[in-house]
Length: 232
Image (cartoon, rainbow, N blue to C red; front, side, top):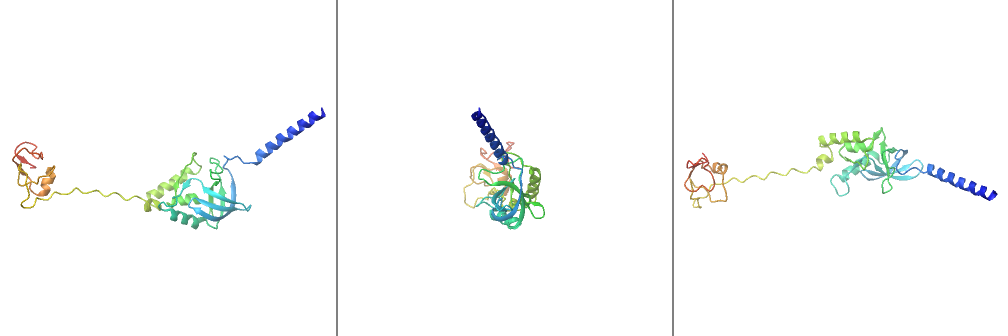
C-alpha cells in the first residue's frame, strides 16, 4: 500500500511539472508580446537586430511589409532608409496576436516602434520604400498599411517612381513615299502607285496622288463604289 501511494505521488508531481512547463513556454503561434531594446544592426530594409533590455539579441522581421531584395531595384535605398530611421535607436517591439511569434527562420515577428511613437514599417510603406506583405493571415495594421501604400503609389513616391517600367513607345507606321522616277508603277492605277504588298487610301493620300484612276482589276481595293476612281 505504501509503495502504491509513493507511485501515485510521483505521477502527480510529474503531471504538475509538465503543466508548469507548458505554461512557462509561450505557444509558438501567439504573437502578443512587448519587448524593449536598441537596434544594433540593419540587415536589410525589413530585417534588423535588436539587443533587448535583458541583454539578449533578437533578429526581427517587420510584420506586414516587404522591401526589395538584394539585387532588385531600390534595395539600397530601402536599407539606407531603415538605417536612418532605426539604427542605434531605442525601440519598442510589439507582436501581433494574429501572427506567429517567429517565422520559419527563427526571426521574431514584430512591429518596431521608433522614437516619436512612429511605426517603422508604416514609415517605410508610406515613403515608397516597402510594399504591404500579408503572410497567411491578415495582420492588425493591414488597413493603415494599405492606405499608406495606395498614397505612395498614387504620388509615385520612392520605388513606385524609380522602379516603374518605362512605357513601350509605339512603333510609328511608316509613311509610303512616292516611287522615284523610273520606278515600276502598278499598271492598274494612274497616277503612279508603287507595286507593294498592299496599299490603302490613307497611304495613297499620304503619297499626295489621291484620287487615282483605276485602270485594271483594283488589287488594292481602292474603288469601293466601282466608278473607276479610287480614294475619292
